[in-house]
Amino acid sequence: MSLNHNQVVQAAGALLKYTEKRRDSEAATNLLADDVETVFLTITVKKMPTGSRHKPYRIPLRVPVFNESSSVCLITKNNTEAHVETLKKLNIPQIKEIITLYQLKTEFKAYEAKRLLLSTHELFLTDDRVVKGLPELLGVKFFKNKKLPAPVNLLAKDLQREVSKALSCTYYRPANGTSSTLKIGTTALSAAHLADNIEAAMEYVPKCVEKGWDNIQSIGIKTGTSLTLPIYNALPNPAGVINTTISTATKASSKTTKEVVEDKSAEAPPPAKKSKKSPLSREKAEVQAEPKKTATKKTVAATPARAQPKRRASATKA
Image: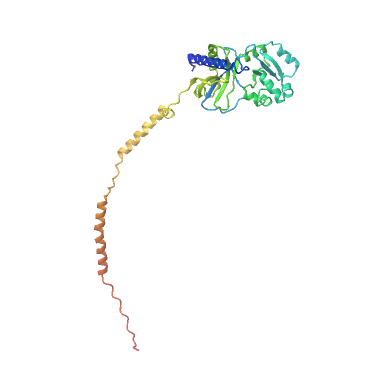
């Protein structure tokens, strides 16, 4: 299954026009407004995922979101200076800062230091061996701003290729609820490039959702300050689909049982119908029964009582 390309391009174009008009209207009042906004792809599922996942899914894009002007922070498990120097020699322009796990626990332990680190970089990459323990070290702010570090294999032979591949992808984290978002581009891209990234992402996202396309309810795009523009909406399931999907064996067995019941009903004689008496007939029957009762009483009264035997007179008179 695939999305309608024309509809995706129209939705991307409409979103870019809306952000441009909004930016022009706020230019006079809000001097600190960002010229470039992030575009998110929203995925709404019908049923929530059963389990949680710490590692995000890596989704490759056709047009990279993070260019040379982007700021990326790399967190490494190895605390040695030699390893840090090796990473710096990769000369990847997107990586502006490299932090060891020891520095994260000591130098960035304070809340203000974590907040400054969060606002400085757009993306955080980390060694995949420590990705599960980082949410507790970074705090809630990283989770709310959807900037939890994405895993990278820093033990790979070709580190240049591994890090570059991670920067050319976006990351999908299924939410605990029914709606999830992933970064798909910026407003600096054209509508055609945004449409290419959306279609490329939807080739992989259904594989990361339980039951795939059957569990996806709707898809849309938005920025951090706009409403969601719909791209795809699933039709509701017709009523009785589950009940009507009966196998042929079940249908055959139901036919045979029905025929047997019909044969038995044909052989058995029809049950005798009980005649229902009307109220008038009941009154007549009661009237006819009354003289019979009186006649039986008279016959009982007419029968003489048995003569009781006389007592013998006493032999001696007083």
